[in-house]
Image 1 (cartoon, rainbow, N blue to C red):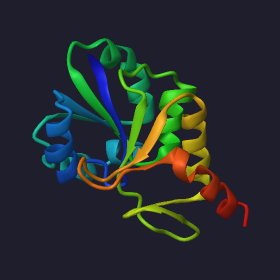
Image 2 (spheres, helix red, strand yellow; image 1 turned 90 degrees about the vertical axis):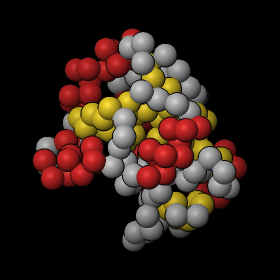
Image 3 (tube, rainbow, N blue to C red; image 1 turned 180 degrees about the vertical axis):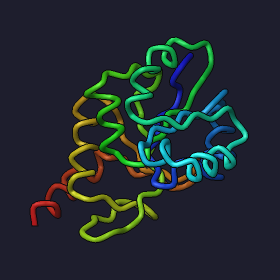
Image 4 (cartoon, rainbow, N blue to C red; image 1 turned 120 degrees about the horizontal axis):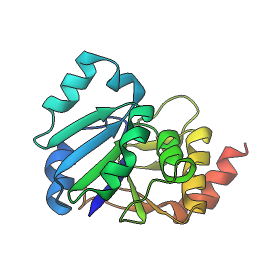
Length: 167
């Protein structure tokens, strides 16, 4: 099976991922790709403690070294990045092979110069460009915190975001 779920989430690993999404889409383990967390023992240990699954916290470079092994594994893995730019690199630039064509986007906190997309999900122009790149590569992008919450598709907000981004 290999990579069975892909998600962008600014909190990376937390209760929604471990309890809600892993029940909806069973997995054997979680692979978080984030350079800062992978190189900080405190952050790495906190993320691992938040998960009941086998959990790997890797830098982008470490993931690239292990990507083929993860993709060819007989186990199901979630791949989660904190930022959409990193996910675009994995899916498009690095050609990660996944068993799904939908990118799930969880919390993306409001910050300066963000555009509101969905409850608890705001994106910057740079992040919008990453989602556009992922969309152009043939992936569906869905903004949805948990399985039973409101889902907003990138396709449905694409023109709205492009117009606001031009201002």
